[in-house]
Image 1 (cartoon, rainbow, N blue to C red):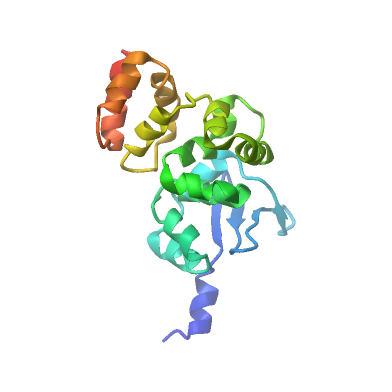
Image 2: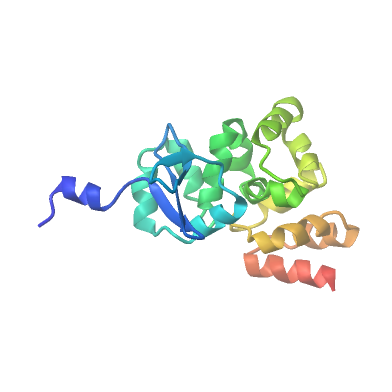
Length: 208
């Protein structure tokens, strides 16, 4: 029979995963660090790429996340529990930009756009400090504009109709494009609660 100590050793609480043969990890809250294992076996701080986060998204089961989330404050824990495949990206967003949490609680589907902002903007690297500064200066509407989304209450209303905040990466660009088209705005605004499948069908129908 395993003792509690041996169980903890066998089941580390840090989130550790592999990306193209390199080991990555996220350490425990509140001093969360994203790190990569060097060739010498040491852990060095490194901002994970969107691709590395996507690799980590499928690496953890419910038990691993349950152990990890137990160390987080109630509000942050409740927020992350709304996600599944997008949970690691959501963790990165609220870690780098904690001031966004109230707005993301109200519009959780916006989290996927923030987690993938570098590719959506064609940037070579993440710009977390810029995101935080824009939000501090111009609020949620300034952030929508920075992400290339229409800065309107209608945009927020449509995003809040998405049932699962784990918006797949493949749908972010089609959804952003649809939100700029009058037909797309009308269709999405009148769609009611949308699952991923329904959202994909509407975006593809508008693109056809």
